[in-house]
Length: 402
Image (cartoon, rainbow, N blue to C red; front, side, top):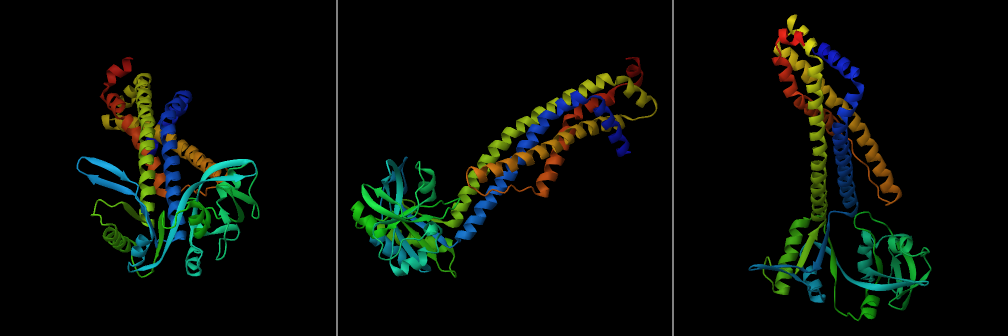
């Protein structure tokens, strides 16, 4: 029975090819947007999760600065860390290493070009190097990293080395930092989420910036038997005591790798919700288009409806026939939208790889494909509900007269 209804619906759609194609456009655009956006955003979430799994979940970043929540106002703190804060962090149970970093904005000159950028000073003592060489921001793709005994040496980020100056900077080149000569000994490994940083020895950074005690942030690696969230809370407690601040008024923040992942996920979810909301407008327009087409179809097929009713077709049969036809219109738009969404997502993957150097693999799950098909069919049937009811109410005698 249903197959017969579907055959009649397909025949009706094929007889009105141009109108049918125009009717599909709204559904097609909406489903295309939904499929492309969801597949890309899920791919981005997977990429973020994968990269942080490579980095390790046992990382914590501790940095000065934060928000004071006072009565009736919110103010930003420009606090700094020093060696006493580093000592307090290192006193916390479960910490394998706490690496102090001094970060500054500098003038970097290569040949006749000069740019403003940020570098960081990292420790070069033997014990710390054993830890930092395992950390993503300290890893190099070319040359070597800073080592014990290095002075005016630097490992450059890939962005600075390859994308900033007219000529690429290579290992062995000389550059100037605040008019001081430095030798490039390495090019940092590119990380898509956290990026790579330009690094010089911490002692050298303290010397050229005249900052004997300041610490910009602390990279913490915890022991495998401890939970990052628990260690992070212990760090907060220790720093509150050291800096004499109350809970809720911290002039520092402590962030675990999982919190960074959650932040990215929340941002992606918000963007995804907004864009899908916009796409839903296209689906609404598509639904209105289907409704209009079905009303027009009823007018054109009034005699056909009268004949079907005169030979025994019930109101339910007539209504179901028109709803199936509108559902098929929605489904066809959905299928085309899925195909176009796949093409757009793969295009975004290619552009991200070629232009941005980012590995992005859109995910086309069964749930996404089936959901898009079912939703487009449902939108079509819903849009055809009123026209179907109108067709069902036609009286056979009156219908045959027209």
